[in-house]
Image 1: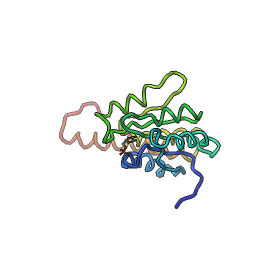
Image 2: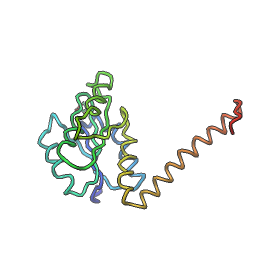
Image 3: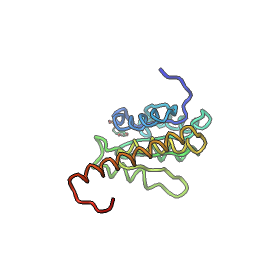
Image 4: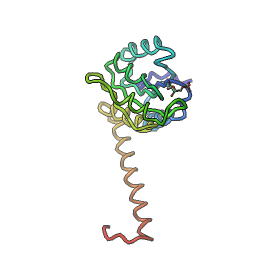
Length: 172
Ligand code: RP5
């Protein structure tokens, strides 16, 4: 059990969201950012959700990644309570019609209460975005992010060169 004080809180409505949400955890691990991960359900544990959101800032968290599926109220309700940035992950869950319910529940927040919503099942990007928030005041994380982005470019250029062996490309 890791008891390092977390900077990022990852919460999800159910453990059935974990296969997706652990992609956010993997990115935070890659960038060496301490995080915690637990289940907080807006509908099934509303008081736990309220307590989590109320205490988050004083517990030292800098941002919260919240994922939920179906009628996905968790990210928006947490954002209603805390001033920490909340990154919402819509999840295509067993009770989701086709994912649009989760996307729209998390995306269509009223003015004044933003949730930074990533793509459906986009927990990986949620982890990267949380790291970018930390990187605004942590140079070591900023350097890891720069290296990550450079790696993305290098991967594409390898594919460009590979395609060249088969397909005409006069661009470069
Ligand atoms: C949501 O309901 C959860 O976030 C999950 O995506 C979905 C289904 O939950 P389970 O019935 O699998 O626990 O609140």
